[in-house]
Amino acid sequence: MSKLGLQLFSPSDPPEYRRMRLIFLAVYGIAVGAVIFPWPKVWGIYPIILGLPFLMVWMVLAVVTIFLGLFFLFRSEQKGE
Image (cartoon, rainbow, N blue to C red; front, side, top):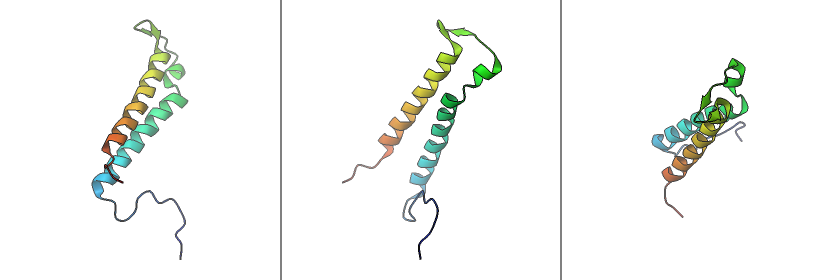
């Protein structure tokens, strides 16, 4: 009998592995959402930070967050075959 649906983890995965992946998924989802839905533009604010428009700073922070999340996810992988 086959199971239907999305299976994120195998039953043999340790809890630390699951926790790290779920935290990554949450941070990644928030950062991607920040890129797709630029909330500062909705608010109608246009401040300048370090000579850049706030929306550009918002996007750069989101991309840096995605990069750091992927970097730490890569570093957390076990060295294996």
